[in-house]
Each structure stands twice: as structure tokens, then as C-alpha cells.
Length: 572
Image (cartoon, rainbow, N blue to C red; front, top):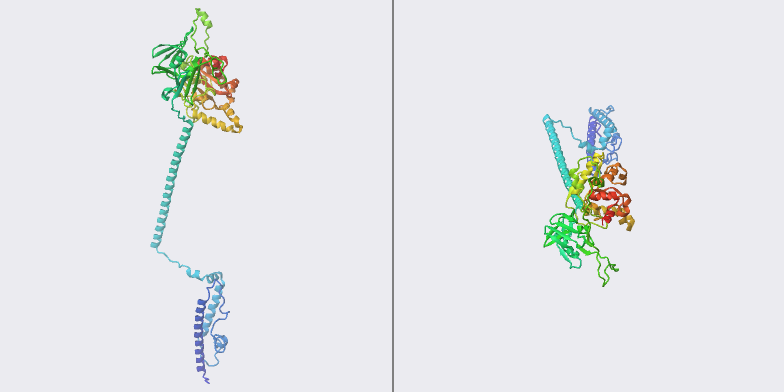
């Protein structure tokens, strides 16, 4: 046994050094193998390594851990065995203890715990790099360039949006224009007339036909007056330019046509046709409505749907249930005569007596209306006396040829209204006098209406009364005339009223209406649908609806207190 203290001390130091080296190597190998085999730690707090025993360490032969302090020499004790001591050992141990204490304190702080729980984040932290002035300037220029391109792209996007939006508005405006135009044309379009010819049955003669261009002119259906003269056995004299027909008999009534004009003389009384008569193939053609109005003793039927005209002598015989003459009975015809009579010759009377007998109405015009006299008083003519109602409808293709714009149309965005020339001029004179009387708030709201437009108005009213079932048509017809039976299609009537009342019966209580009621006849107009004539006209009271007939007939109806239906029966 070696008892040399130095030798023992040296061996002791060598053994402790070997033990420390072996422990360190085994510890590193063990930790490396554990890191390979164990799953990654999930932010668990670091435990004090001094307070926990090391695991998986190699043990010595005696079953004790090689780094057990009980088996190691105490270097802090004085060396009594004479062994040589390591002067740096104590300082190293104290340094290790201070480092462990510092690590424990650090692990207990919040930042230390966060860093110990997130090692990957701690490794991923970027180091702050100090940029040079050149790099800062480059970054500034890049940011400025980026802002410029962003602004440029934004401006370009705004311009594209604005251009597309403007294009959308233009397209929308065009579509709206087309839609409005289509709607307007649909409301105002005139139904295309049937261009097939008309067939004629004059008396017992064979039925013949005329082309549409010869049968319908200026909106009027024509008939061959030469054939009617043969049916009635009229005498004819004159030339092709001035033809006179004479009813044989004691009275010798005459009718004289000026070919190519509207002028006609009935029993020497001048009147006018609805359209110019014409002479062709040695035959005279005149409007059939003139024949119906002026020739008595004839039954004239015009079917505008079937394009058929029938003219027969009026029978006074009693007819059978089928409306036919009983077999074997001779026909007895009514007398023929013309509506207008030749003025009777007056006896010689003194001038004073003539003044006393003469009835000259005091019209009391404030303005000088001499330029309008021809239009207000066209004479004793039935051209403007046409009766239009449910029993006397106009054809769907009838359109007046002398329509003109009314100057007094209400300025509220509506289209200018129209009337026939004479009616429009007479209405212009009426408005001049009405304004002179102090009534300046009356305007025209409706004039001429086409067949199709009147049809659309009637259908709208018909839908409103659909709940009445079978009574819907009669109820709608009292408010709006059915198509073809409206005077608006003739171009001779007008609706006028003030804004405050509108087209309502309350207009009949205004001073404006009272003036129109008492003075409209002076200008050739009549109140078409009076309040006390609704059973005769079939139309409810309309204080705003006025019809042009000319001063002669308007004065007669005003003084007699008749509506147009009554006056037609009166003069017939």
C-alpha cells in the first residue's frame, strides 16, 4: 500500500479528473440520444438542474453515481493529508454555482419563461441591421415609386369605371327613347285601313265594285251619284264641270255640283261637301254622307267593315216579318226632296218695316274678329253638322284631311292638340274674346283623337268597370265613347277647362263655364252634352266638351234648347 501523500494526492486528482471527463462525455452522449428519441418539448418550464438527479448516467461498480459529492474530496476543507490542492478548483466551483443561480433567477422572470418556452421563436428573431444612407434613399425611392403606380392604377380604374358608367347611361337613354317612341306610336298609330275595294248595290241593279282609291278619298266614302239619279229618275242638265240634277214634279227641286270642288247648290242654297267631288268615266262621284244628309226619300247604308254601300228608295208599304215587301204587292215609294229649300220671295216692304222685322243678333265682340268671320260662320252647311254617336259611328280609317294645330293647348308637356281648320280658327277667336272678358285660365286639353287612341281609352275604362260583369260596357260607354263613336275622331270637338277643376262636373259651377255656355254659339260651338240631355245623348254631363257646327246651326240649337241629336231629328 502506497502511503505517499503526494503520490496519493496526485492519484486522487487524476481520478477526479478522469471521473469528470467521463461524466461530461457520458452526459453529452446521453443528452444527444435523449434529444433524438424524445419528442420535442412543448414550452415546458425549465427545471432546476441542481435539484433534479441526472438520469441515464453510468454508475460505478459500487452502484453509486460517479459524480456523487459524497465520494468526492472536499476541496473547501484544508488539506490535512499533505496532498497537493488545485488552487483554481474552488473558484471554478463557485463560478459554476453563481452561473446556476443566475440561470435559475433568469428562468423565473416572465421574459425568461417566454424565451425558454419558445426556443424556435428566439432563434427566428432577426438581428437588427443598420442601413446605410444609400440604402435608405433606395428604399424611399422604391416606396415613392410604389405609391405612384398605386395612384396611377387607381386613376386608371376610376377612368374606366366612369367611361363604362357613361356608356351605360347612353345605352339606357337610347333604350328609354326607343321604348317611349314605341309606346307613343302604339297609342297614336292609326290602324292600317283595309285597302280592299267597296261593293255597291244601287236599287235593284247588279252589285258592282270600285277600287279602294276611287271609293275612299280624303277620308270619305264616295258613291256614284249618276246611278242614284237613274234610281230616282232625276233629270240632268249642264256640263261635266257644272252638273245640275232636277227632281221631276211641280216643285222641281234641284241640286247642282261644281265638279272638282266642294261647292254644291241645293235648291240654289250654297253649301259644301266633305271632300271634292270628281267626274270619271262619264259618271259623277260624291261623298255618300252628303247623300244621306241632304236627300230625303232614300235609305242609304254604309258598312265600313264589309266595305259595302247600299242605296234604295224608301218604301211606305207595310213590310213582313223579314222586312221584305209582301209578294205580289206593288212598292209605294216615299217622296223625294232635298233638305235645303229655295228661299221664298219676299213681298215688297218698306225699309222701316224691314228693319223692324230683321233680327240681327248683337254679338258684342270686344276685339276685331273680322278675319275670323268666315270660320265662325261658314253658312248654312251640314259639312260640320255630322252626327257622331253609337248609332252613327265613324269608320276606323276615317282621318280628317285638314287638321291643324290648336294655339291654346295647355302648356304642361302634352303634345299640341289638333282640330279641323275651320273649327281651330273659330276656337282661336273664342279664346280672344274670353281673355278679353277676364278669363285667362282656360286651356285646351284634348282635340282630335285617332280611332286606335280612343280604343285604348275605352279599354282602360272598361277594365275599371270589369267588376260589373255584363254591365261593364254600358257603364264605360257613359264615361268614354266607344271607338268610332267619339266626336274627337271627327276633329270638330274640343275639351277645355281650367286647371283648378279639371275635366270635372265642378267646372259647370265656375264663371268660366257660364261665359262659355252663353257665348260659345257666337263662334259656331255648342255644349255637346248638356246636363238635362243625358238620356238623349247617352253620355253623362260634360261641361268641358264643346262641338263645332258653325254659327248658323249653333244659334238655332241655342235658341231652341236642343242637343245635336234633337236638332238632327228637327231638321230632318
